[in-house]
Each structure stands twice: as structure tokens, then as C-alpha cells.
Length: 212
Length: 212
DNA sequence: CACTCATCTAGACATCGTCAAGATTGGAAG
DNA sequence: CTTCCAATCTTGACGATGTCTAGATGAGTG
Image (tube, rainbow over all chains, first blue to last red; front, top):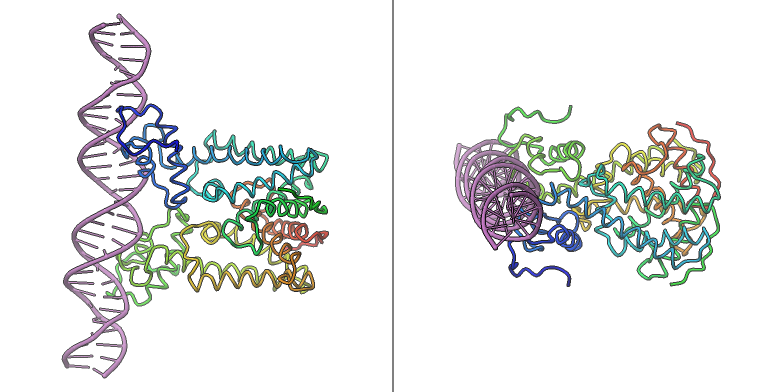
């Protein structure tokens, strides 16, 4: 709907190729997966020649890295939307973040795999690492709010952060590969699952007050 | 040490090419990673022409699948070794399995990524799915021993299995990508980490009686 | 001993990422 | 407005990769 049709462009110069390549790359990723992703395919989707992307991304990996940074920000936005819709207490906020984490993995499995399981990303890239640091900062803040202290101040705090992240990330990763013996397709499933998992990570009793 | 040197073979027929390709594939995976893995590279390591593997594996993905099945079995063996060395009570057995899980990820990160995060495996392959089912069966049995009942009989049981698997798997996955803010290089680290994570997944107090 | 056929080689093809050279044109400089 | 530079894009090429085909080899069977 927003993609430039394959019909030949009017202008020799595209005018907005960098953004068009990012959009094309998203579609390519969604359709072909991380392993089937092709730079030439992205160029074709954007309606330009196979060598055009080189003027905007040094590498195929650079395009993937830019896509991952953009995806990471949408990942954060998904979590934030869940937090905005949740009760403002620290506990429900952390659970909402976990729910957004799982939501994003379910709705964007290939992007999730690109971000967390691809060996092709340039992790020294400023854009990508900034998004990653943002996400980690959010996690630490959310866990710290529940604990009542800065998690980085103690071994227990770091363990709580690690446990919370690990259990939600592990569930998301195993769920998108169909390995867990539980349902998660319905919106309420993700909510209850996040509640249960985060609760366990923090040694607390789940609230089970999940809504849509 | 066990690889056939690149010096030309005596015989036109290799005699043991299938196994040699599996060994070569392991080395290729370890050296180049999942993304850098190449069928021609495996053939070269085994000292045969680039088209020779086709007679033993229909695909490059088929070789990767066979490698994953083999790796899965070694993964299970690593866990079993830890369990054999642990106290025979259900709790310590489950923790030992978690420790083996993390050990394997640390010592074989690319194989771990191939098994759990590659889109190139043929999951309908009998060998691979048998190994995967074995691993899952072990997990269910270990968790069931701790709970005192068959996890598949109740929603809580399935949640306990999912939580235990998720937290250990998530930790392993995040650790090999250097994302968790905790140390895990020393053998004792993995032991204590597994104890802490499994305990949280099961709402129990860690024993912290970890030895090497 | 002869022969069969699984095994392996050599060559070719399409596709991929990347590089080099040239065409186009937007936009700054005069 | 005109000139011209430099960014943008195209075309063509190269090496590498997975896979296919045809043919060479030889181990093991009858």
C-alpha cells in the first residue's frame, strides 16, 4: 500500500530510496525470512537496479542492521503501548512489558529472529546499540521499580533482571518456533503468560487479573 | 586431528564420506558460524569435489539438519553427564540439566544457534525430531519428578515445564550473545546460575550448594 | 572374472553480493 | 538563467555458492 509499484519510475533519481529500501527490506524479511533475505530482492521491491542500495548502505548487513534498529524501536513501542494500557503500579508495568515482548515476537517473528538470533548484524552500529541500550535501560528501570532499588547496586538485582529477561525472552523464542506446550495465540494468553512468567522470575505470586 | 588432511586421497572413492562430511560440517560450523557455513567448504574440508555431498545429503539444509540432530544428541549427553555427577534427588537433577543446557550453549554457541535459531533445518526429519522429542521428554520427566506428578496432567504442570525451559533457554540464548549483565564463564557460575533460574521457574528457594 | 551401480569428478547454470565505469540530474555557484 | 559538480542510479562484470547433468571410477556381487 505504501510501496512503490514495480512500474518504472518517472525519475532517474528515486528521491527517497533509503526509506524505500527500509520498507522493501521489511517486506522482504517478512516474506522470505532472515535466511531468504536478499539485497537484490529489496532493490527490485523498491524498483531500482541491484546496485543502487550500495549508495545508501555499504553492505547487505548494513541494511539488515538498519532494519534491526528500526525493528528494535518498534519493539520498544509495542512494549510501551502495553504499559500505557496497564495499571500504573510497578508490578503491572513490568508484566505489561513482558506481554509486549511476547506480542512483538508473535506478530513479527522474523524481525525478532533478526534482532536476537542473527549473526549478520553490526552490533557496533550506533543506531542499533542505542536502541538496544534503550530496551535494556527500560528493563532495568522496570525491574528496579518492582524491587524498590537500583538492580545494578547488588548481585540480587542483576539476577532479578537476568531472570526476568531470560524467562520472557526464552518463552518468546520458544513460542515462535512452536516448542512450548502452551497456547498463546489469543491476546489473553500472552497477558496471562507474561504474568505467570514474570511472577516466577521475581519469586512472587501471579495476580492473574489479566484482561485483553 | 581426526580430519582427513587436504592432501589428495589415495582412492577415487572416499569410503566414509558421509561421516567425514559430518565432521567437516562441525568444523565449518564452528569456524564460520551458521551464516558463514558453506556446502563447498565442507566438501573441501573432506577433500572431495564440490558436488560429492549431493550423494549423501540431498541439500545443504539436509546436511545442516543431520548436523543439528547429531548436535542435539551431544547436547543431551552434556546434560546427562551433569545429571550423573549431581545428587540423585529430583531437584538437583533438574538443576543439573539446566546447568548442562547452559554449558552446551557456552561451549558450542554456533551449534546451539543452529539447533534453536536457524530457519534452515528440516524439522520434519525423523532423526532431528527424535532427538528433539528425547530432549523434551527428559525435561518433562525431570520437572515431573520435582512436582511429584505428570506435568501433562494439568495446566500448572505445563506452565512449570514452560517456565523452566524458558528461563534456562532464554538465559543460554542471551548469554551467548553477551546480553546478560552477569558472569558465567567459570564452571561454578553456570552451576549457581542454573540453580537460581530453575528455582525461580518453580517458585522455590535456591539451594546455592553449587560445586564444580 | 565380468559387470553393475553407488560413488565421485568435471563442468555448467542461475543467483547472490560486490565492484567499476558510465549515465543522469538535482542543486549550488557564478 | 546558465554552468558545472557531485550525489544518485544503471549497466556490466567478477568471484562465490547451491544445484543439476554427464561422465569417470572402482568396490562388491554374481
